[in-house]
Picture 1: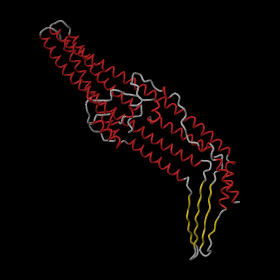
Picture 2: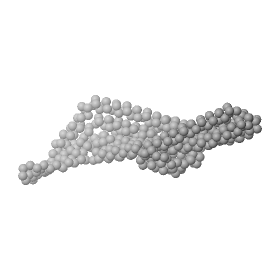
Picture 3: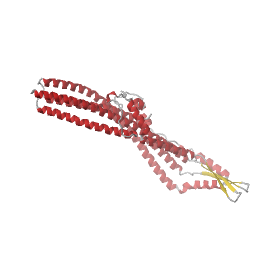
Picture 4: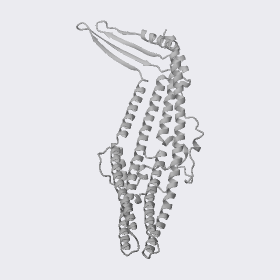
Length: 447
């Protein structure tokens, strides 16, 4: 019987070279090289996302807030715990490949007791446990990618809130400066009215414009407080004032490069998550295929009882488990077939999801590149427009004093200047945020 048993084990081992042991391999992604267009960005094989967040965001206040968020943010803390959970599951799957043993002692009549050592080992000839281990490894990598995604998004969101505050600060400063300009204009118009060179309508119109700016100041102050509170909640802090710099002092990389499209496969956390989900589905299919083959567990026991002086061996359990393992797939074939079809369907779904994640990543990079380039050009145009409007105000004020211009021309020029300065602040913000969005879209902000 022993000889036949070992012949059976040898035959099963020869079958183990089948595809059930094959590891997951990424399919050829022929469309990756055309995921995004370079536009006018310099041709570079190194992505801007390879820059650490400390090097990308040079504002010392922002750096400190990012560090605070990385330490206290609740979502990131949960993501770290998910990684630990996946690590424990992987360790359990590794231990399942090793033999197990139990030692038992029982007492009977006075002076008598018995002891036994029971051992078992699931042979995993057809790779069921090995595929489970690889699936657990893919799950760990997926959880690590999830943590990376949370951190990348956290860094980008903190930067977004921070730069929003800087934009609002700049717009508030512009509005307060404009209030002083309107006050001077009102005094000038009142003097011209007394001199008979203008009328009450001009004064009232100027006062109405000033009141509109005062209302805008109140709105900006309210928005600043709301953004500060939102940022504190994101950082895991109670509401408090946010120390910060100035919008015009911000320095970001002047040149942003997307690198080679294939980098999205390694840097984008959502793409990595999608691929690891596909890998898990692949190993689930392998496990479902392995269920069609015998699942053999070798077990036995050594026993010793006081008074007998003999150690007994129970080989019967080995034969019983062997027979049970050989017959089990025969009676469960219908169930196993349904499980295999389900697993194959889920793997196909995961493959579509992986492909779509790459396409979505390409769209995000394209959009971020376009927004960044457009915002840069708009800021240049804003500067030229402001210079022209400042000159227009000076000229119309001078002409009005000499009676060669109408007060409406001055008021219109001042309103246009205010709007242009507010627009410039918004476009500077857009240029910065588009750079942040590109950095995130490329998978930056993790190291």
